[in-house]
Length: 174
Image (cartoon, rainbow, N blue to C red; front, side, top):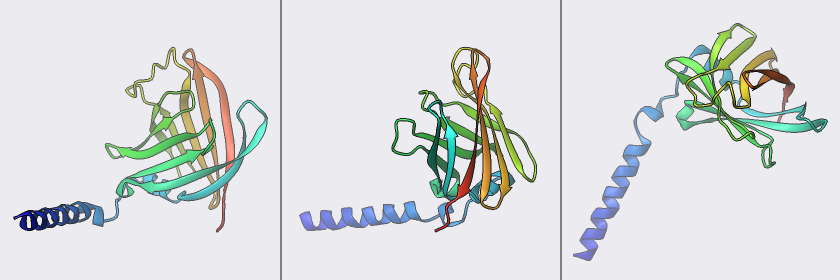
């Protein structure tokens, strides 16, 4: 009896695993044109930025996750300033959630784009109070060349721009 029950449990487990690994995830995720452009960033990038302590070198990692439906950007990995930004389509339009070292998570929606640039602006529905909470309010990503991008983050405090954090990233060739 125990052997029969164990065999049944093993077969049911294998069946469940098979169902989890089959289906829609087998097809590559196709996102908005801007999301598809962001996929080209997958890999390792290096740059320099001044985060208030003078210029410092840092690495940015881009990974395609969640069955290809999201892009993870990890900056200052392993440091107290580590931050993650998740890019994904929201109702067919590129958006992002930035998990910031300030302890909040502002969201942004694609405001405009062209062949070279993606411009994001604050999403008022993200749960961050843009009038009283210091937060990253907008982002511009410029595709300078195939292996060079420039990001410019705008920091808001008390409802207005406090300062700008631009930096250029170069792809690390393997």
